[in-house]
Length: 131
Image 1 (cartoon, rainbow, N blue to C red):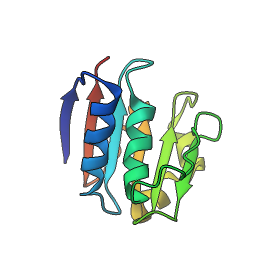
Image 2 (cartoon, rainbow, N blue to C red; image 1 turned 30 degrees about the vertical axis):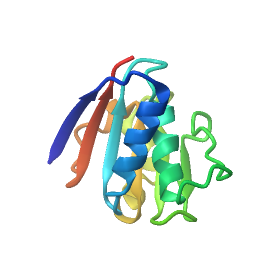
Image 3 (tube, one colour; image 1 turned 60 degrees about the vertical axis):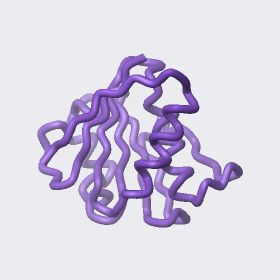
Image 4 (cartoon, rainbow, N blue to C red; image 1 turned 45 degrees about the horizontal axis):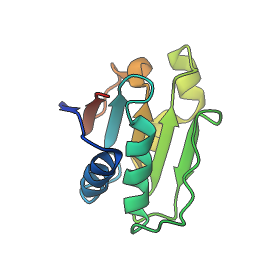
């Protein structure tokens, strides 16, 4: 089942606070599909969410997955993965990243999720960010 949130924030801090609060409810198998135009705050949301899973540790490094496609975090309260599918062109490329394995073991945050919108995930939330 997919739930959908359309969100617009007054400031980057408000976006980060919301993402950090949402992370309190995270569990393995949960998928957050992050949509929005360039600069809407998808990466900011993902970083704040993952940092919250690391107990708010501001020194915890959260690199962008833009060039690696997926960054995984096993040092957090629960395993997490952050994917950026912007440069991928097919579902086969998504499969090569081990997407299904991540679904079973981690909370998964996906930027530019259009290639996987039809995949069956039992616990997913579409977060539409508006700049």
